[in-house]
Length: 269
Image 1 (tube, rainbow, N blue to C red):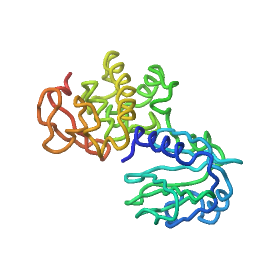
Image 2 (cartoon, rainbow, N blue to C red; image 1 turned 135 degrees about the horizontal axis):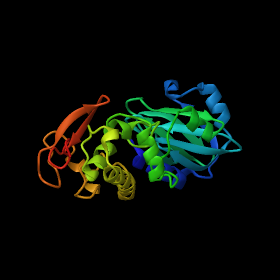
Image 3 (spheres, rainbow, N blue to C red; image 1 turned 45 degrees about the vertical axis):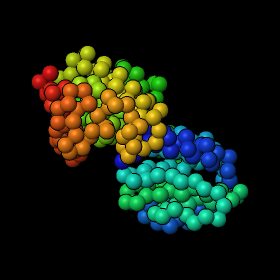
């Protein structure tokens, strides 16, 4: 699933390829991908509008338009963006296509159709309606804000990190990496974390997400792009801890499979 680093790179890709272009036509190949708006209304609001600089909040990409409004994009499990110029055929599994007045195109592609695209008048209102917590890489999300997120919810730390209403942007993949780097077992209840553990987790939230973003798109699909000290290249059945060589274990948390090192991330620590 695209998580914060991937969506941040989608945002930069869109800004680099589409900023300033005027949308001439919108092709909705799969109306079920639209959230809260009909195909006709979506096209009517977008056609003739100019794409301006975008913003990201957690796993959501929002594209500002002139004269007004925002396109919202969530990428589900398999969503990606693709830009091209000219008369080439649209990519396979294109659910929504934006045709620009100068002959450029942007495709929202989603193989498994679990993402969503929509239109809203106000970005802040959308974030509030989606009940999203602070973005994990927002400069305003400091240790005090992290402490508030922890104290408001008593549950295991793995599930807390994935809860978008607590901290927006972290999913199953990067929560595993964050906890591995912080040497914290995913099952530890948040109210059992001492000050040192909380500081380590907060530090790794920032460091892991920033590192993955700097290393390039698709960290989950390109593990070789990540540092050799990261868990993700070994995050699979039969994988081994990059720190001590112990075989990784798997466990279910909030319906998702977590991988961890039983030696480096001891539950009793």
